[in-house]
Length: 444
Image (cartoon, rainbow, N blue to C red; front, side):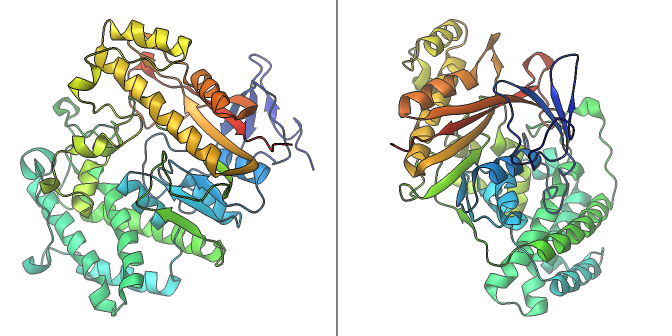
């Protein structure tokens, strides 16, 4: 039955549609409408396993999936924490996740992999028994990375995290698990561990950049790593059990590790629907956000070089070389080029960052157009930044770029953001996301 405004509320003051929870898939959001979805499911099942900047609330991709596909596969080319893929899995729709960030790949894999309830509970009982001050020194695993003891962690917290890491690594030996099976459980517990690392570090808990702010006078006490890990693991285990009970056994989530949103390597006309939320321009440094977590989990090795080398591969990166912005770069859209030129006069580096972002996103739009079946949709959720006093109308530039490639704009509306993990200056804060639904023509 089509959802009507009897099932939702309309604010008479500003014309907003306010939705409490899910939208029915047959409900059509009017073009240009302002919408506020009050999410009920941000911690539902595995959705709440780990903080992640600019994370989808599940109700929006759930509505898009239900409305625009019935067989899949669905692709999220910038999958982040895997919200789209979880929702596809729960709807019985096969999906593909691509993200250049190895931490995002791990998190998505854990959140979409069901685990055996009995083995999960047994391994957890064993790990808890291992967490004590008498843990053998030879089993403690503490990685070496810049600033570990003089900037980021107290030594007693470092030791506690080393004990947790050592216990997780020894789970396969304690239970005689074969490698493929053991990795699932190790990864699960590593995500539990990862989710407490920022909280027990000296870094600011609420900033996307990993920084120490002494004025915060952050209090950390001996035993905090053990206590927080136990609390988080208990919650995540219960949510994983519930997820595993309802998770279809015959639906695939494919996580492509050596792929990129600009060049996926997938066959043409192989995707029915793509849904994504691209990074905001110059707003979230995902590598620095999770740098401590990735050091502890062994995802990045300090000997491999500076983090900047990894960051340069990301869409929306602020890590650029000086030689890249010695001259003004123009894109080819008059409205965008006017902004690039204006910003270049005061900040050549940020002008190039904006330019590079749209160059990368044009490659992504071209790639998704190739992948979609005729009539398939690309649903893009994006916010507009303020950079150097200029509001970058990203949604308008995306519309022009996608139209030039061959997409049709089927619908667009505004989804208000009500919860922030992104700590940015108030004047630059992104309060609205634009949801644009592009359609690949059928060729009729």
